[in-house]
Length: 479
Image (cartoon, rainbow, N blue to C red; front, side, top):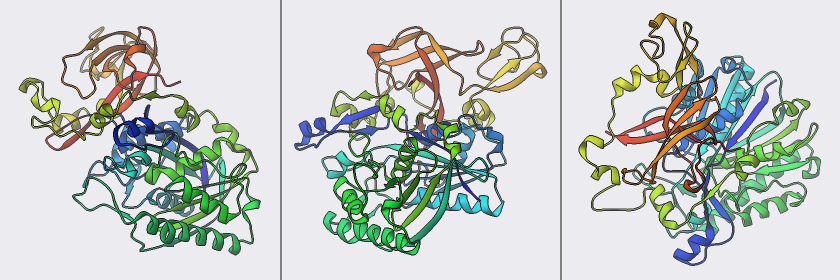
């Protein structure tokens, strides 16, 4: 048997109120949506969700990473390998990308279940993340949000059994993007909802329940993808599920439609409120449908300490204005180009693929050195101990990314050419006595203070020579 061993999720720190969109364009709607920081993308969010999911898990037991997204940062270059490296997994795990569909996450889940059942992997980490860019002053600008979810699939210590599944495909064309498109395209909304999403989902759920001689009343919870609140409710009503007691809220009001990540984020939210013995009806849509009957086991009690959806929702900073959102999503066109392009030549971002490969263990895995001679730890990796000058043979690599820390000191620079000034540089004392000097991200400038709890986060540093460069930053601890 194969099933869900653990779960995790990620929601960016920043939120944009739809009231602000209303002030700019009119209308606006209620609630808010989650916005990637300017140094976040689908890879960095997947790392966050994967870290949440693997909490308390021996990483050496993970045999594969499946990454799913419609917004992978590279057109040709695997994203799963970045995620596996940043999670500090073994180099012999299988990595694979799934994309091109809002259903990519549950299709990756199917592949993971098959791999575990077949015995080619004992544990597979499925991570799905999306940050689709909507057209300004469109319905999508208020509706789309950013987020990620992760599930660990295995054959032992199963917290959620997958009792039955059914899949269909459909050539229905509703939302798409061409090779050169920056924004998603879609056909007339009423047609794609009435003839596409709603009709397909109602048929899929009805056929599944009939085939297994069940009704919606047999399930404690119902969790499934929806493009908007109206259509989501229409499917729930057709199912015969009670919106108040059974249907898991699809996060429209506080996160937005997170694309390929939405179904699994909704499932994670349902699992947070579930108890052993609960049955969950789970579904997804995108170029077809899939429907699953899940059963929660006693093992769910061992994985409650996740940030998941609830704790990420409680940790947030509201963007002050629409201009900040435009800057974060690089929507501003300037004759001079981005700020970093107009910076003095010596301070412009650079890329050295040779250096990135040579230093990959501290660039991606956040490894430092522990000196066995003087018992001190240092970052980055050194040729000799920076404290006692011991030779390299006395230095052993140790992971630092999950160590907690405190802010020892910091500086704020208003003149540095960064996307979100001021540029805050901090000295962070991590557990074990190691000190890291780092850019501080996801911060509220008004609340930064010496001694505050800090943690490490994997972020996109800059783009140069057509390469997305990633490294570790620090941020105020989110809980």
